Length: 186
Image (cartoon, helix red, strand yellow):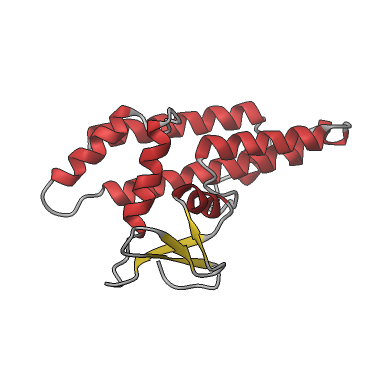
C-alpha cells in the first residue's frame, strides 16, 4: 500500500498495542475494520522494525469475523486458498481473487444503478429509504467492498439497461458460480 492522503497509518508498539497516528490514540482490530468499511486505506507498521504488518492484521480481522459466525468465505474457497500456498511457483489465486472481488463490486454497483434508473417506483414515497436499505444489504453481503462501477462496457449497453433487478441479480449469481467453479478447479 502506498502512502496516500486517505491512508491511515497505524503503528504497533512492542506491547502489541495499535496506535492511530492520525488521532493519537490506541485502536482495536474492530476500530481498524471500521476505518476500512468507511473506505479508508490502512497501513499497519511495527514501530521498532518498520515492517509492514497490514496483511497479517487484515487476515486476523477476517479470521475473527469468520469465527463469530459471520461466514463469508465458503469452506471450498478457504481450502483452495490453503492449497495455493503449497503450490510451487507463482500462484494465480491472488490475481483471480482480486478479479473476482472486482467483478462482484462492479455487479453490485451496476445493479443498484439500474434499479434506480429504470424503476418507475422511484417516485413512490419511501422508495429512497428502501433503496438505502438495499444498498446496506448489498454492502453487508460483500463486506463493504465499494460501490463504484468501473468494469468493462458490455457489447450492448442498451440491452443491459433493459434488465430488471432480478435479472441483474441472476446474472451476478451465475458469474459468481462460474468463478467458484474455476477456483475449485485450481
